Amino acid sequence: MSGEIDLRAIKDLLVIIKDISELMIDLAYTSLLYFNKEIAEEVFFLEERMDKLNYKLKLITLRAARSEEPEKLMAILEIADAVERVADASLKIAENVFRKEIHPVFVDAMKEADEIIIKETVNKNSKMIGKTVKELKIKTNTGMHIFLVKRGNEYIYRLDNLRFKENDIIFAEGPEDGKKEIEELVGKESVSDL
Image 1 (cartoon, rainbow, N blue to C red):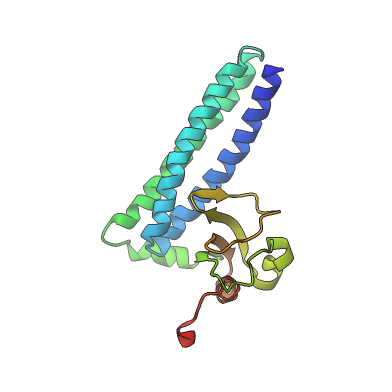
Image 2: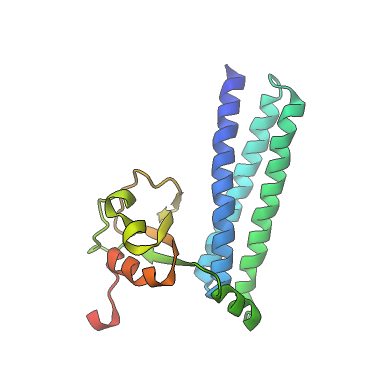
């Protein structure tokens, strides 16, 4: 039974680690493109979290080796090492934001990308409060895909049943023309509203 529990825990951790590593890459490039230190700091935070998850994954994998063939578990340890390198590389990309400036060639290259990533806070007057992504039909109505919500210090990746709350920080990616619609949904005041 313990081996079965360990294998389930390994699977769950692999899913979380995969999601975080993909997120880190997106955030690292976005922080650099927009020279945004706040987004770069999110990468630093996620890298620390990734270190802890990676350690836990390795520990559980070694524990599972008591009841499983160790050779079959080697791939998991190799994946853990590879994902750690991805996290470290994302961190190195984000670290560039703290330099004096980014070379214009990089900025020009990133501006030619098909999608942008934005970060917005759900305000008290937002139409999103108490509703899910599905109920709001965000992808259909804006073209943007919300892929992460930060609530307090918690990062939420599985958004299927998440109901938005005031002060949730959302990260969305998609075409630039969807940015204004997302800003309206979160209840962001425009300059003309002030």
